[in-house]
Amino acid sequence: MTMQAKHTTAAMTENARPMRVTLEGVTLRREGREVLTGLNLDLGIRRMGVVGRNGSGKSTLARVLAGLIRPTDGRARLNGADMYADRRAALRTVGILFQNPDHQIIFPTVLEEIAFGLTQLGRSSRDAERDARATLTSFHKSDWAEVAISTLSQGQKHLVCLMSIMAMAPRVLILDEPFAGLDMPTRAQLRRYLQLFPGAVIHISHDPQDLDGCETVIWLEKGRIVQQGNGPEVMASYLAEMTRLGESDDISDLTR
Ligand SMILES: Nc1ncnc2c1ncn2[C@@H]1O[C@H](COP(=O)(O)OP(=O)(O)OP(=O)(O)O)[C@@H](O)[C@H]1O
Image (cartoon, rainbow, N blue to C red; front, side):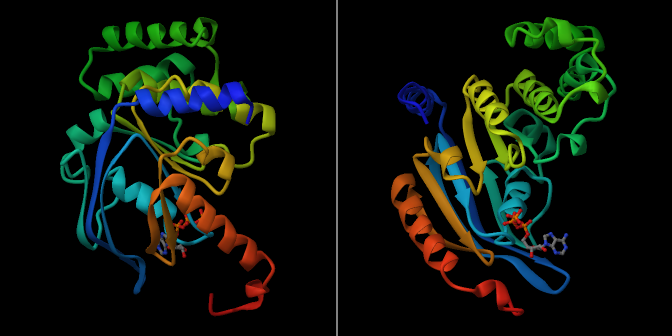
């Protein structure tokens, strides 16, 4: 990361509006096994990273936090509200970006896609279209309004998803590895657009560079929190352990 980008990330972290993330004994069972086990957390965050190996439960936790799935036991809350129980609060509080924008996009054109979320918030279709155009203008993308989303690149589709969420102005943005698989320039450009988001961010990623500006990091393994707290400290322990495991051969272990 360049010095300038580091400064921008630091400034963004300082300016972001904080959000309280609370997990009380969150357990999630699927097909007879525990995907998340007794997670407890109560933190004020601005930028929080979530790390862990494949299958450690990161995406499941993202969905629980966003209120998309209900824990089998326990409760998850953002700023005191249960996002699963209160869908109206969830729409105003949380936006989530997934790895595959095609799983998120519903409408044929950029304007329709951005306007949809605004109608979900209760705006009339006229107001939603006006506000969607305003969002496009703020991103210097007015000429994208009538463009068919099917003609866009993956990176451009991600940007449409990001603009759709930014238009709704949630308090927290959850990023579930949205940029995995994109080329480096596209990732760098999308990271810059992300910096326009003024709220708190929860970023799930395998890429330490994505988590550079996170003051808080949670490390998950096999559905449990291994370590939580100060971002640089947790990342240092995580990276040391990942390096150690990289030198082992647990890929051969069929019980993993
Ligand atoms: N609906 C489901 N039914 C059965 N098992 C599930 C379901 N959802 C998740 N799992 C399992 O739970 C575990 C955690 O999955 P999850 O996708 O949350 O992990 P992850 O840390 O995000 O992994 P990755 O880094 O590979 O994306 C995996 O073993 C997965 O197969």
